[in-house]
Length: 273
Image (cartoon, rainbow, N blue to C red; front, side):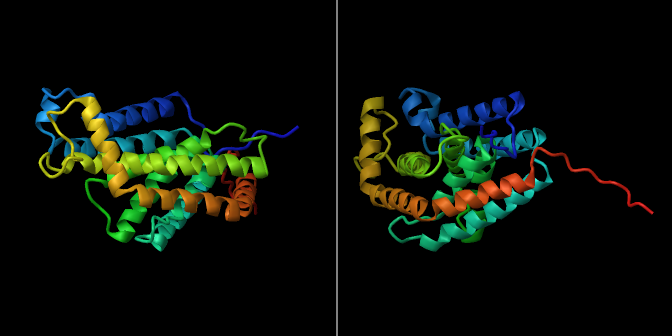
């Protein structure tokens, strides 16, 4: 009988509530063009709303990280978080500007799978923040990227069979998730910038006076025209790297997790004389 996989962060009620809160705000921040009626005050301030929601997310994401840390993010988990976040931040610029090849994403999938949804959410947000500082990509879009990456890594930790599924079956599951989640990430981050386009700029821009179906159709065409190639490159590179490097990295992460013994409390004793 296999024992349950040790996780560096065990989500408690407070952590789950904080995650639910920031996720709800994130959904509203990204989906408000489809949630607000044309005659609402939000639609009347279409150019200002993304900035407002970005400010809210900047305030809420640290709250979630702090809440999760209270539920058991010990020194050993912090050390692993730092190593993985630094690795993810360093991987992101490698394929920047090259057909959407972003090696960072496959590492987030594997890390979230082994270390759990709570750790995955924090790792995704911290990695994206660090990579933004590294590449100079700081702007109003950064909080949305942090949230989307947090969801991306957290979702990998929620996949079924973490203690039973191994081998090719697990790689197929992670590859399939990474493929579709790469497109979802692209669509979510597109939503952060799409409302900035002027209504008269093109027929794929957000129209504050348009209906929900009309704007949804505009957004789909916008994604197909502006980011499909990039998202496809991200998805295919995630699948390829998961199959090529996944077995070795999964073994290394699980071995490090066992040796770290996250659930064992660290104690300090006075030296004996």
